[in-house]
Amino acid sequence: MKITVVGTGYVGLVSGVCYAELGHSVICVDKDPLKVATLQNGEIPIYEPGLQELSVRNAELGRLRFTSSLGDSVKGADLIVIAVGTPPLPGGQANLAYIELAAQEIADAMEGHPVVAIKSTVPVGTNEKVRELIRERTDCPFDSVSLPEFLREGSAVSDTMHPDRIVIGTDSPRAEALLRELHAGLGCAFVVTDIRSAEMIKYASNAFLATKISFINEIANICEKVGADVTRVAEGMGRDKRIGASFLKAGIGYGGSCFPKDTQALIQIAGHVDYEFKLLRSVVEVNQDQRFNVIRKLETIFGGELSGRTVAVWGLAFKPDTDDVREAPAQEIIGELLARGVEVRAYDPIAMDNFRSQFGSGDGSVVWCGSALEAAAGSDAVCLLTEWSEFGETDLQRLRAVVREPVLIDGRNAFDEAALQGTDFIYYSVGRPSLARGVKAPVPELSY
Image 1 (cartoon, one colour):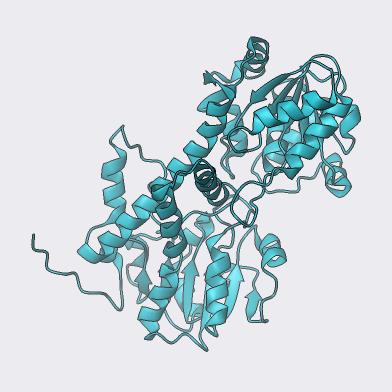
Image 2 (image 1 turned 60 degrees about the horizontal axis):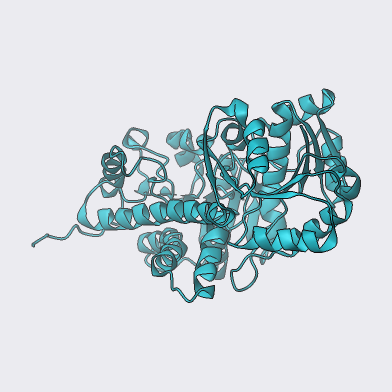
């Protein structure tokens, strides 16, 4: 099958490389000539485990090419996948300008009878609008498909090659058959539905997962007040098959390119049809506030005054195994620390360059460090914001030897009781009051 993927962002690049790995002939198109040159040289502009090896191998086999020429690439394609960005506009709604531009260029160049699939996350009704836009510019027959993606950064290759399900939104039996053929070797379930339902499945899925995260964080906050352990609560909840264990890990909230953008977009979609999505608004509000628990715990320890302190920040990416810092909690936490007169010493094993380019140098009070221990050296507190494995494996005795004050704020519950044994760290995690050391809020007497 000849496939053209328009857009080599996270979704487009992973999808294109994996389609080639399945044995298809794939051309990935991007307007950025520097990105295309990077990909042609066997390099990957994002950090995603396993992706570079697959890209190089399939390029060498002649199944994968990269180009900036969209017109030449869509000629003769069986499947054209639109995977360009849909960044949020100031009001929260998705920006469809790149989708529309790609559709226009595809319409002007396509031939034969291709299937045009939108893999980008788009508001309900977008596929129909794009179909009409293409029809206005060409007499070439084509079929439309909504083909939402469900990739997790850090495990995107595995998610593509071993998906839970493939959602196909189309009214064309021909298009359905082609996409079933494309994914036939993956051994997964197919959900075939109308186009609008497929578009909604993507938003509803991400909104529900975001809701689970905010819910368990609210439970964690209550656990801290009543003396319960959120990790045990989550374990007990997760063993209920109706609930499931995934996304029940308490912490400082979600970030990244999907959940923040998609929750806001769904709120906007609801608003456009005169419906107030109260639950999802609360999910977003809880997530926004959760990250500032780190600041509140520092204030508790230091009596409310943080000016003049030095704080080490471990982790800048929004999650481990990615260099993506979009909507990462570290952005706002570091910003708040700087605003309070704190010197920040920051380290991340992968995302340092991305974070610095987006965050900037601030007022000069951020020191960018080359290791976790270097960041911690001379600090009054260490704040763990991303659960990279190297942080959880840190020898706390070695850490104690380099810090000025033994204060550890564990925003991802990376350390357990055994790791803390024999140390004098003042320690706070999320929803585990039994492990807290230092200034503790009293557990109230409960009477019902």
